[in-house]
Length: 283
Image (cartoon, rainbow, N blue to C red; front, side, top):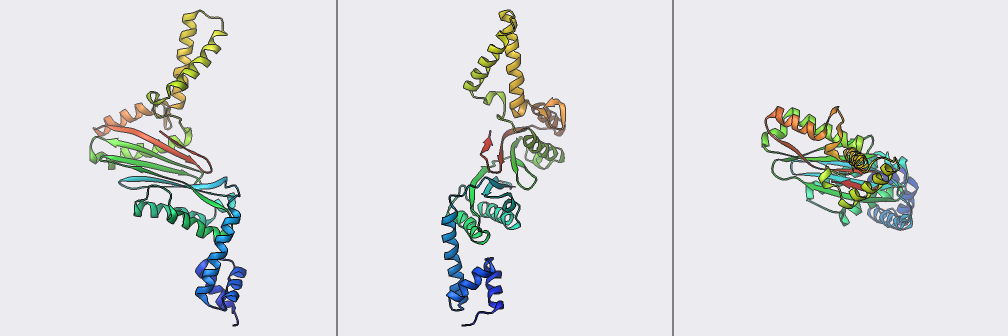
């Protein structure tokens, strides 16, 4: 059976596969459209197997929040060129939609299948590296921020003591600024109370050795160590960091200021950020 250019174009439009692959599949299927479609899928699955060992150190982070959850999806790929590809971006948004609408809380066969479908078209190894679902309870809400073309994704979660405060413009502005703050300063902990005791002990030991070399009296050394540790924790703890929009106060102090202004209490309950191609940080 003769294969026309129109037949090839029709199959390409339907599958996204390359023109030559479409032509080969149609020839092999004797012009049968459905048969050629099946052959293309089989070719794609075989190609996926060959690419699985290729490193996927590039990628993109996708974030979306709803009234009852915040979702972060991380897709990885081999090259930054593909990370900026429109089809790659569309895939990330489609995975977000599937997770939200179907109530998924983890990576599953359906989501992996969506990624594999694009691999057969783009012919580069990709991976659905993370699906993080952060549930939101009563009077809880989230703000989010995605930097650039998905190089970094942030979610900050909050709780209000009054439901009406969630849609307050001042509260929404503060929440958005908090997401920008996390993106800018990438804190290691939510607050000083959440810092691992072993980490504090290690830092205390380091600062003690440093201060001892100054040749000061023991009480002076103790004060120096205490000051160094306090400053260090203020640098790495979200609520104790200087607020991104006003370094005259900490994030915690800004939350208190906003709470007073709106006549209620706004509490920052946690944050998560994901760097494309890397692990996430949650607190």
